[in-house]
Length: 128
Image 1 (tube, helix red, strand yellow):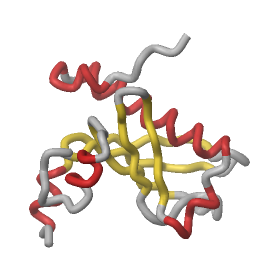
Image 2 (cartoon, rainbow, N blue to C red):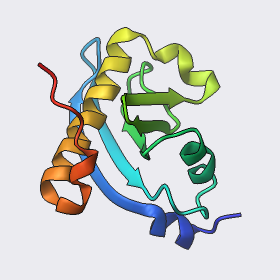
Image 3 (spheres, helix red, strand yellow):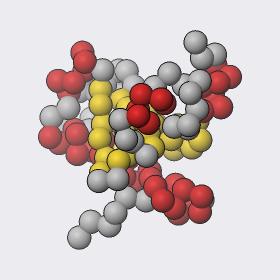
Image 4 (cartoon, rainbow, N blue to C red):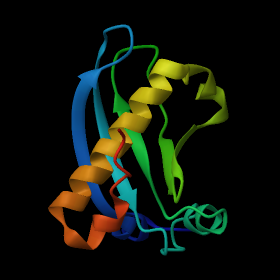
């Protein structure tokens, strides 16, 4: 079992964003990058074994009932990004909300790559 010190040590980067949910409700969103090689984090090993190159979490703060109350996991694979909610909140992930989450993670990864050269490999491929 991981203790709080292990979990905090597993957070490599975090950024808070403000935006608007589909439907117009304001939202504050924290995006984290977690250490995929830190097996003290219970999800690191299974996520790494399924081929992800990096992962982290999205935490939403909003009064909108359309907003997940629990963490949302994001994963970066060689061919793109995926987001996953807990089972009881998957119904929230319609096309616009899924696109919002993917867009926020892509923004976070691009900004993190620009900020620190050791994360340059995280930058998502350029979309044309």
